Image: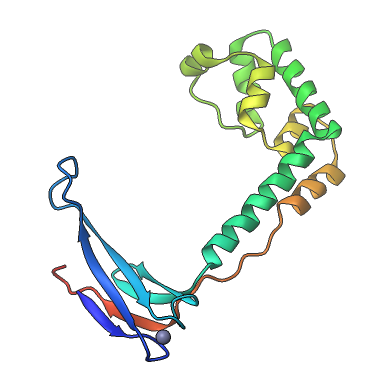
Length: 183
Ligand SMILES: [Zn+2]
């Protein structure tokens, strides 16, 4: 549906309107695919849809950013798996189990800013402190708040682990094609 010259001029940029002809696909379901057909520009750029326009993006930035954020997540998980963090989680689990009623546990979590479902659902789904601490990967700042413990060193360690660079994933130059209004 669109074809134009690539940045170096030796190849083409192409946008296709795609429809699946499988019977299980909703009738009228379609999408667009952008392609860079050029030995020089193809490895460098990808043609992506933004809103109703298509533009060139440096190939691989999104993947590299994903990889960085995955690495940050793993670093954070390592800190949270450490003795110090695990000790706090264990303490929190014990505090939650010591509460005299589901309502009290619910109040305690809610008051510390944790997400909790309404009390009726909470009663039905609550499976004990240990289970909750493991499943919900609770936010350490809130955990410390419930325990009334100050541990800025651990919070700083978690923040440092989470920190990662992200390359700006911006369109290179102007849009090369914009879908017509009726497309
Ligand atoms: Zn080219």
